[in-house]
Amino acid sequence: MTQGYLRGRRIALCVGGGIAAYKACDLTRELQRAGATVRIAMTPAAQQFVTALTLQSLSHHPVFTDPFDPNQDSNFGHLHLPRWADAFIIAPATADLIARIRAGMGNDAVTTALLAWKGPVLLAPAMNTAMWENPVTRDNVNALLADPRFRIVGPDSGPLADGDVGAGRLADLPKIVAAAEALATAGPLTGKRVLITAGPTREHLDPVRFISNPSSGKMGLALADAARARGAAVTVVLGPTAEKVPDGLDVVRVTSADEMYAAVMQRLGAAEVFLACAAVSDFKPETRAEQKVKKDAAPDSVKLVRTPDILAEASAKLAGRALVIGFAAESENVIANARKKLEAKQLDFIVANDTRAFEADSNAVTVLARDGRSVELKGDKRDLASQIWETVAPR
Image (cartoon, rainbow, N blue to C red):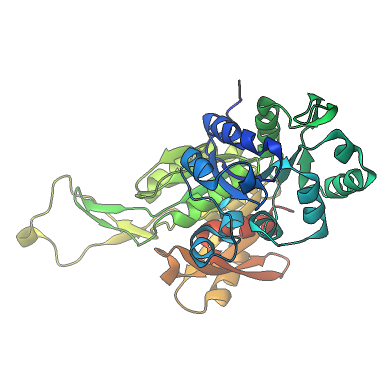
């Protein structure tokens, strides 16, 4: 019985070329039953044991088999897979594949994808006992396990496909799924309580008209999903958005800046990290009409008043006990204006970006730290979210 830690996780299953490759079919199903989404890469040798079409049918996604195929690489190739995944599982990890991973080779779909991956990797070795006990194989395994990103499950002992008996069997599938769950809860944010705001707010003039902005919520949700993938317990206070919310998040839906303020303040006491990504309206109408205002009865002007400064108040309350990260969406003097906001609100970090990226799928940002350091990042918003956490998580 799984614990639900894989629900909503994105698993890249990399299949090596051994007789145990056929078990990748059942492993795909078991990971899916645990709630994960699975995409698969295969070595050429793996395709001698099980077809890509079979695994495509089971995973419901195209299988990456050839980094030199223009169609594959442009749609789901060696860079897309590591940008998409939360974790890599190598099963079966053959002696040959383990050796090539250690050597840093990139001569097939699996090794090229792994070279572009910076996150956790679970090795599930499977081979003949003599190959497993070979000092070269053990040295390769130990060298990989010296990197804290790598974990291992198995191999089990018992009858092997060639009739021998000994260590080298692929670990039982429930063990692999359990090891994947352990990997999913062992990230740099493991056990941290992260509170994130995302999306726009709407400040209503009447029941059908409101002041808002073009924020889609994509960046905030990507940051929330990336924090969850790194082991955090994540609460998202989410403004109006049509974006699909990833699984595994505690979501509090709000509409106005006042509602977002109340939701944040109510949950601030438990937060160890607060990240304010929402595009909160700075102003709201002084009054809101209870019924739709007819055009011929509408006033020529509307008096606006300021909304609460959620980030400034949260930063003051969390000073010295939690990490506080803000966003600065600017249309001009982006870095200078972001630096002023960082200092005025006493933030640990601020992510500066151009307002033109509100509705885009990709972005370029500069992360500014309180100590004066800065780093420029770019990519699609999911990849960018991972880069931002890699930048701030060491704090």
